Image (tube, rainbow, N blue to C red):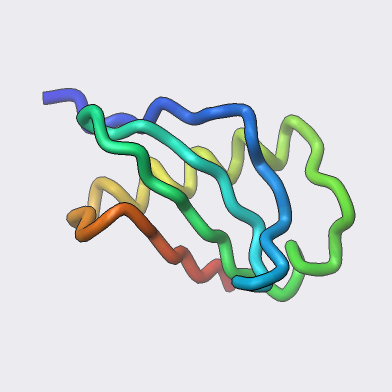
Length: 77
């Protein structure tokens, strides 16, 4: 079974969560992924390379975790 996310092109900083976020589809479900990181919070924009790195972080998270609901919080050290 393919458990990959299909990422949307909407990476943005969410002031309410104080984190970068992106939406993605997983098994027909729309999920919002929040990336919590002190270093990321300092950035005003995220380049394509970093965006792909964040998508990979989410894929690795999915390999070890089950999605409960439609919001995922990922803490990056």
